[in-house]
Length: 180
Image (cartoon, rainbow, N blue to C red; front, side, top):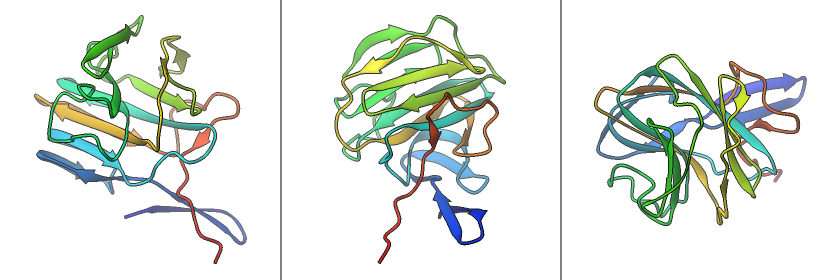
């Protein structure tokens, strides 16, 4: 499943959606709402230099959002407990390899928009359009947006039509297309 957007006469860009999932996670709204219990990985890696996406916290509970490689164990919650995932959790704590790597200065609440930027150097977070200045560094390999929900959490994922404008130079995640 891929979302399609026409930009001009002869150019179509394909946008990612949430597709790969484990446990009892439910993905609805054309791959843009995550609920139930479990984790989900976007169907497209971040291949471009600077990418941006958002989540809207529709219902609180336990949740996490960030980046992961394909090797990440989506069956083991919470994410951030292995070397293949970097996530911020509902309490604002940032985890990688079972270690707390930082904490957002403000804790996201129900109705908030959490923006994420990735430039192959840092994963940064924005709360309702404001930078949180708490980046993850040292992320290596091909990574995908990753999400998990539990205990009633519901997240809406925006890969385009953002609530807040991306920072300068950052664009929606695009799916690579072959020219042949």
